[in-house]
Image (tube, rainbow, N blue to C red; front, side, top):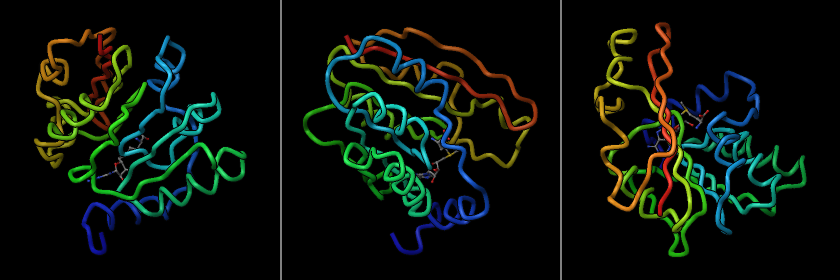
Length: 190
Ligand SMILES: C[S@@+](CC[C@H](N)C(=O)[O-])C[C@H]1O[C@@H](n2cnc3c(N)ncnc32)[C@H](O)[C@@H]1O
């Protein structure tokens, strides 16, 4: 991972700002719904308040990110809250990450988009489990023309990429002219 461009960029960002450890609203919503037994995976987690929330509810959590700095911040906060035995941080490029064989009750990914990672995430959700995703849409490139097109959801994504046995339980647009529009989706694996 040494010299990975995403790691260098994000490590630098996380060194510059203090983490809030606030759970993402999508995590709050998903964790308030009925879920099967099983762990939670937070992909592209950052110093994740969502992982801390899930662990606080007694779930085992796998938190994956390319940023060593983000994972160290999360691990330290988990220790401080006595949740470290529930949170496993995984330092990985999601392009190469593969889930374990047992599956997850909930897979979350917010602030990151990659079609291949989405496909991997779908396969990792247990029957009855949830997938929560939020990412920039194509429209975000109006506010931020430098945003690479491959980081942005096409108009029907990510719902159009779900396998047949899935049901979208919620989808909404989050307009933001300054940072760029996002789409949020929650889907259940039936
Ligand atoms: C916008 S932040 C989102 C963080 C968190 N999920 C949230 O919603 O606050 C994007 C995250 O993706 C991670 N990331 C970027 N590229 C990655 C990659 N190739 N593999 C794994 N994580 C990556 C960054 O380190 C960063 O933590």
